[in-house]
Length: 113
Image 1 (tube, rainbow, N blue to C red):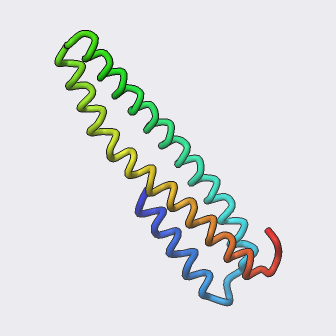
Image 2: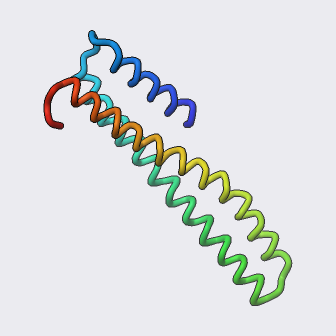
Image 3: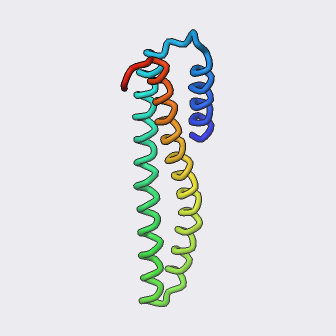
């Protein structure tokens, strides 16, 4: 997903630099892609929240039962949670960058979007 997202942002930047670009078509395409990226971001947010809740539940279960298996489960959830947070951070910043690029496309069209 990171590669796809980065390549798409590079494509938009190069299209903005080319004056022969059909900015109306680019605008319509960007709205669809932004919708896809927002959906991807939402799904990753939900997964990240789920893993955070599971980690804290495992920690609480460990403190209540003193079962080392619960501590191991919490550690596993933390190991998985860190990459999820990093990926969500990338998606959030990428979508915000797409918003800024969309505004530039609108400016090229010289219309209010």
